[in-house]
Amino acid sequence: MRAAVRAIVLASLLAAAGCGREAPQPAGVSVAPAAGAVATPPTEIAETAPAPIAPRPVEAPPPPGAACLAGTVKEASPRARAVHRWVDAAGITHYSDQAPPRDAREHRLIDLRQPPPISVQASGFDANLPDELQRRAVADALGVQRVLRDALAVVPPPGIALRVVFVSDGEAYGRLIGNPSLAASAGAYSTAQRTIFVRRQERDEANFAVLRHEITHALVHESIGSLPTPINEGLAEYFGRYRAAGMGGQIEVGAGREAILAAAVSGDGGEALVDLLAREGEGFYALDAGAPERERRYLRAYALIAVLMRDAPGRAALTELLARQRADPCRTVAAERILDERYPAGLSGLATAWAAFLRNPPDDIRAY
Image 1 (cartoon, rainbow, N blue to C red):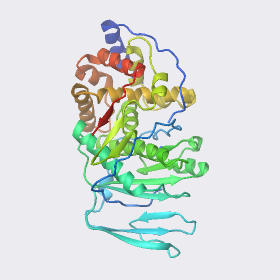
Image 2 (tube, rainbow, N blue to C red):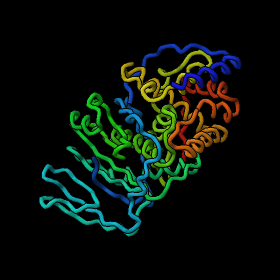
Image 3 (cartoon, helix red, strand yellow):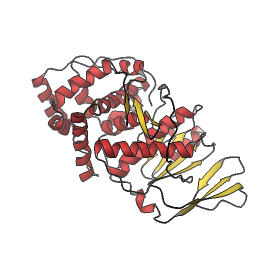
């Protein structure tokens, strides 16, 4: 934790409003080497009804020292590319810009006239890919990228390459993400390998929720840098709820209401918010704290971003935070200071709005 900053901001909050102590609450379970599929952006995405938010398995935290910009655009070819589709001996479908092995079946060559703004290279390590992965992964990535650009002035470089690997076996998944103790987690974004690993879930919608969460991490790592953990996870949770609809997308803000209520804080929320913002890395993930406590942190981080994204002043404060991080991508900014400076009512006012959101999640659906 950044103890000095926490003490300074906490002192200002106490002087402004007084802080209540966080009350323990019950909660649900918390909820992330490559090859693969390149997909072109669709011209229109068919509207789908929002699915209820299901409890998430644990997400694997990023490895230590994961900082700066990913730079995957350097690997994206500026020329038109051909994509190979084939089925291997185990019946698993692959997409790749590399030619398949000799024993591949159902080989088909897909010609891309122009490189897409985002490419998704997807493969199954020991699992088939979810239905419509190509279309939906690219649609979700483009949608999240567009909201980051239009609402938060985050301009990503063109030609971002996202690698996704789906894994079924827990032991193999633990080895691939480099942390066998997290073999039961649902997803991980490896900054070292610049690869999203997804532990295959029974329900495709659960797979896509995990994938959207990790896609957001990848876009943040590519476009912004080493954000404070609560802001990084809050953005991933917020956009994990994104659903492509028509020519845009939407986020059902109050979905999973019971889980959000279980993460509520007491008092004016000031002390709890400062504690959340001061938690970096393992201080946020706290893998030894148990699933309910991790879930509370994820949901509180989500609620913070949802409050900031609610209106123009909140978005302006978040935009400033992201801009400062992008200006110095390798050094994590002090979110507490920036939000205290930029949010109209300061950090104490933000804490009040955040606590109110957690106690009474709105039912609105935000269209983007």
